[in-house]
Image (tube, rainbow, N blue to C red):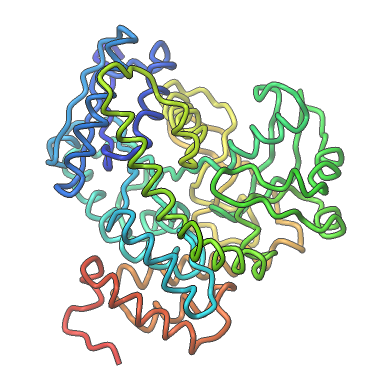
Length: 443
């Protein structure tokens, strides 16, 4: 325990890194990090240096003995790491912009983790995460892999099925954002709120919500029936629920449910935004430019509040809370992506789910909920089928499986449209999809 902890962060040049550093500073007494290695690729070198220097200033300002190392050599960073965090984006924001814009031409929603965008982000990301897993087997076999890279559920699914790394936890800021939003809605401190989460990443439901251990679900459902209270995440436009729908569903939805239960409205909004302010990726590109200009300021020694506009609010709370709980065997309850192990009856035991878990030194233990309410079960199973077929396509480079995955997804209206979108997006992302172009001809 005295030697301190080594954390390697893949995608260390991310604009989110100051969030992580802030979390490490706040929890240093519980989590004595000795070395933080920030890793990136050549294309991200400039951002890595800017963000890395801010990280060093933040730690110096806090007066903590954490060494920050910047490198483009992943293997050096991984050697003997205790925790590996992944927060990278293959193809950077330009790839996300294509994910969002191309499907709109076919009347299909383009979004980072849902529908065609989620599929292609998964196809680009999964081979890279599996390479990282192979390096971890050699260089830090005892380390925990904490994945924040989207689509987090699909990525966790792929690691569980196609790698030898079993110490993997997927993490998202949506559940903690929901907790914070409900705390604000009820005007109580976040520490008094607990939600029973179950479902999948960006498809998670709150089955019950408690204040000081007493269920307040009915009160919250009533408040959520008000259109003003529908969305808690910065990067999703809050379009209100129909009161009859949300009251009858009788569980808490996450903001991403808007894409499935209000598909037309969200598609119309995405089309309108793409013509005016640009896709979300294009908006984020501008936000990031502004953030990195701030990060360059040598007098800046804290995480700037503008980072919350990026959509990553509470990320450090969720990330460092999880790592701290594993390290200290805290046995507190947190929502994470992990192997189901029978916790949700209608999902295969070996599949990844997002669920409230007891966090131990041996990893998350999911809280058994039995089954999801019948009104939510089918959609969750459909998205799980999509994730599994998509992960298989990513690993095998099977073009037909990619078409199948997109056709299964409820945001896609037909197999013919799925094929057209896959063909155009395969070509647009060809550089990052080598597994599909080895001795293969797309018909």
